[in-house]
Image 1 (cartoon, one colour):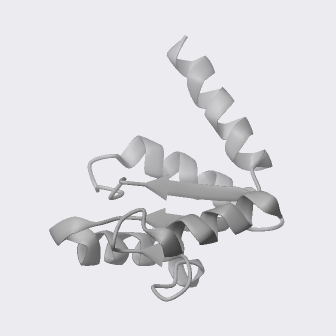
Image 2 (cartoon, rainbow, N blue to C red):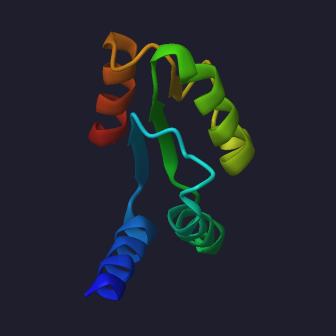
Length: 99
């Protein structure tokens, strides 16, 4: 059953136009999930569009984690929102979902 969940997640990530992370800091200890994300990211012809919503004292650290992991696809002034789910973040996510 556990393996089926991973296969299902992989299929959903492969087909998703947008990857939206809310309140997830991408910790180093979550290596299985990070491996899945990277494997799917690198296997796609077209990269997904990202939105990352973080907040609090660890926001800068979360940005560093995402920047190192996904590279230039994560940009602080464009698709990384360090002040939580504010109006700017909601507008960006809404725009992703409308397109």
